[in-house]
Image 1 (cartoon, rainbow, N blue to C red):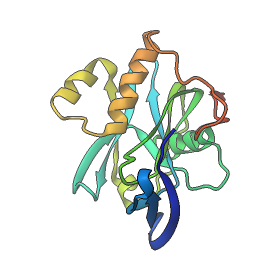
Image 2 (cartoon, one colour):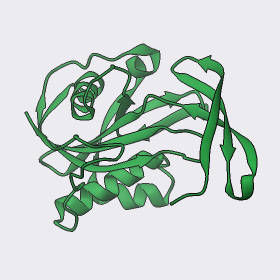
Image 3 (tube, rainbow, N blue to C red):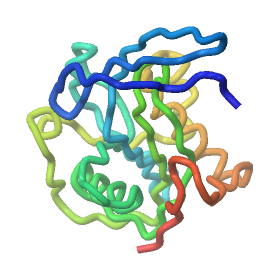
Image 4 (cartoon, helix red, strand yellow):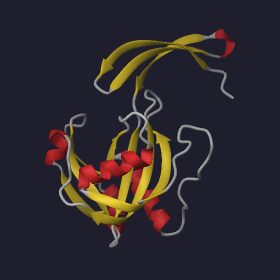
Length: 202
């Protein structure tokens, strides 16, 4: 059990969907110090794999890095009360125009706990159905391209820096292990940040 606790939190500013706080931490020996934290809605990630063992990915502009990134489907959990699996299904339809008969929970993780509380729910989407034209949101999504990447090519793309997005590397690695029967997916567990979220069949 940690001897640290957040004793107080002061709101500093809002930056779009992000909130920035200054947290007062009490540590062992009555030590007190502050840390700046970025508060985030949380996110979903969807690794969509078709019947030919191709991952359905998108290449889109990311302002933070000033260029295009090849990545799996993802989106913010910005609809109040919406279950992660529902958000995942919605993002899959909006970004790449697909519906999955099976959504398998692969993992949950903090993206960068050194400065943000962003928590991600990751799913594997299988038995895909084409819904037609995606309902993209915003200028980056309107201009992004959809690419089907053979799972067999993933190691090479990572090794040559063709895939440098962390969530995509994690998701593709776990998806391949699941499909090979080496990993069974996320265990349902009471309590914790992801409690109550399970596999979905559409």
